[in-house]
Amino acid sequence: MRLPIIKRGRDARPAGEERYALEAEMPGRSADRPLWRIKIEVQRRPQGAGNSLRLRAHLQVRPAQALGLETALGEQAARREPAGHRGLARTRVRRWAAPFLQQEFNHWLELRASTADLAHGASELLPEAARLRELGVEPHSGEGPAVQTWVGHSGRSPQPGYAQVSLVQLDKRQLPRVLARLLGARPFQLAAALVSVIEPQHMPPRE
Image 1 (cartoon, rainbow, N blue to C red):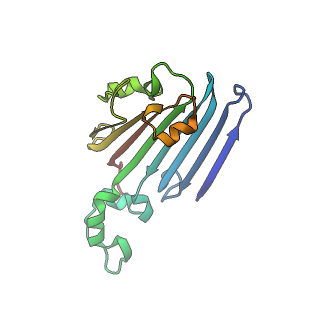
Image 2: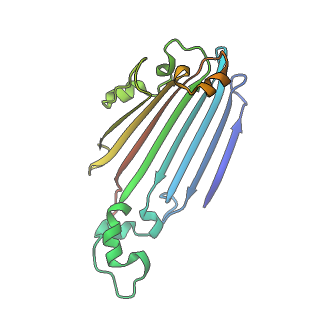
Image 3: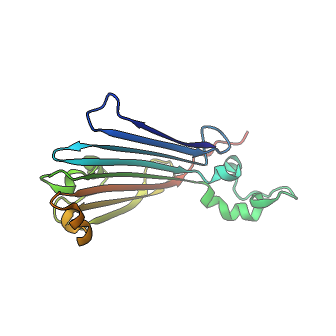
């Protein structure tokens, strides 16, 4: 297992800026295809009369790696197993579990918050706004719901997958009164994007 590694740094960066990074993974059948992998990066820096915070995270999960079934499932999920084969490798369980185990799960999160006075509020912080519009995602600017969600097919794999994009945009006026009071006269805005993609893994042929 690759244990979490936390890195912190300030050198060669603008005054007051801090960055943190964490990486961890659980090995699977091969070193380059772990069961799960997570990466988190956090950046804090001064912005105008306030501060900004940026958090990026990526979680990748490959369930087939947990049982060492990736190659076998890629060849034929429901084939008959030899007598005496135990555990989740049994034929009936393989047949039931194959659709789930053959999927790869990826989740990306990007969150940005600021206590600076931004002319366009939370919409000014929205990550990859132009790229989102290319994908057919139309985030509102200014007045609109705090949470928006789009669901569709993923086009990254030869076989269709599932994709969901959720956006959150919050300004100080949308916060609970208790939290707004804690901020005092400081502005506040937050924008976040969560992208989830579930699609079949590429299964190499069994030799």
